[in-house]
Amino acid sequence: MKPREDITTIYEAALGVFAEYGFKKATLDDIAAELGMTKGNLYRYAKNKKDLYRNTVRHAMLRWQGRVRDAIEREPDAERQFHVMCRKAVAYLAEDDALRRLLVRDPDIFPMFPANDPYADINANSVAMIRSILERGIAEQRFRTVDLETVPEIIFSVYKMFIIRMYIKSRDRAQEEMFNQMVALITQGLFKTVS
Amino acid sequence: MKPREDITTIYEAALGVFAEYGFKKATLDDIAAELGMTKGNLYRYAKNKKDLYRNTVRHAMLRWQGRVRDAIEREPDAERQFHVMCRKAVAYLAEDDALRRLLVRDPDIFPMFPANDPYADINANSVAMIRSILERGIAEQRFRTVDLETVPEIIFSVYKMFIIRMYIKSRDRAQEEMFNQMVALITQGLFKTVS
DNA sequence: TAAACAAATAAACAAAAAGTTTATTAAAAA
DNA sequence: TTTTTAATAAACTTTTTGTTTATTTGTTTA
Image (tube, rainbow over all chains, first blue to last red; front, side, top):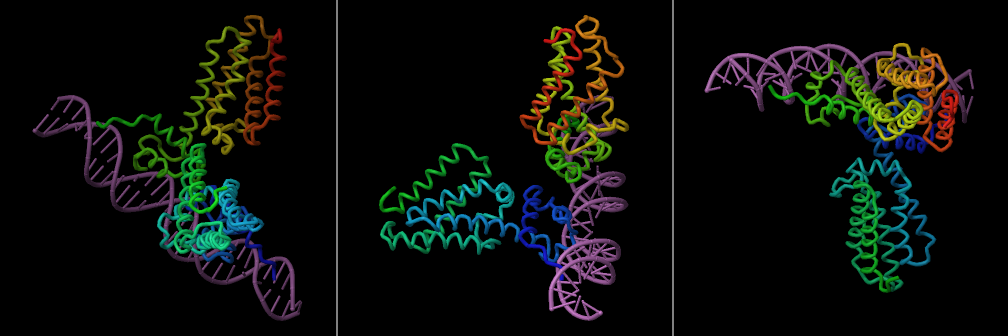
């Protein structure tokens, strides 16, 4: 059988087109042309346009999340991990023009109300990542004891909100200042010794 | 009767939408929404979509041309006029993001072959402007005597080509250097005393 | 105030475009 | 060669979009 096109290249092409035109104005013909194939063939990789879009966003978000995860893996303690996580998450998003454009356009990616969040599983991973850092910090007696059910969720929500604010209103010095202050605030509330 | 919407605001809105999406992906609904009216009403201002597009481009080009004309009007002699014309034409285009985007997207605006040029009359004005500068320079005995039938056309064509090159391939230092050299070359060929 | 007029809308219509399905072709592996 | 399936091309369906038309709304003016 003819070797199947790597699904990642499909998502990469789709990401570019969706980011450029938005979901509505992007057509399957555009994406197929980008890939040098016909639109009918796209239906071997996704069951419809909406599905292709969702999986494309999912792919980009997972890559983003993966990069953050990789970055914190090498850090020696929970305090460093927390710090690096906060910094790298924005830094990597800043590098990914396409994902950023989608994030600004599509309110479903980071919804204000998490009910029916199409990317709930991915966001759950992020919350889990935060929780495991907190767990470790508490176990090592570097963090204050906090409720591991609610606090990771809250931290994630606040972080999400700031990212949206930073990019929907064009990123400027004032926004970054607020972001830094927010991270400092969370950090101070969390760490036993403020570093 | 209800006062008619100023045609300039129509063109301004249309310019923004056409520049953002391109002719094909821009819809009359988009433009009407931008103006806070319904698409049907647009047919009081243009006889169809293509016509609206043409007039929109025409409007933007005339404004561009007008600014250049204003800039050279105050200059004291033909040499200064020629110099300012060359400089201001690129400078004003650099300021007009929307027109620049259209110019890059739509090969009909500055066609390689002038036959069936939809903006022939506007471009003719530019040629005429160049010709009048040359006439004046020759009359004042500051320019060499050149053929006023062909030389203005040639200068305009060369200039056009450089503008297209500068913006289709992203504008960079090397491109600007070439542009400067071209202007210098024409100037040296034209002026009796090189300034 | 009422008639006249034009601008704007909303809805209808036609044509084009875009999403989806299917029959067929072609290319690779067994 | 046979089998398998990726890919295509074309058919089909639905939606969108360009265009027209009947109606409404708001101004002017007689």
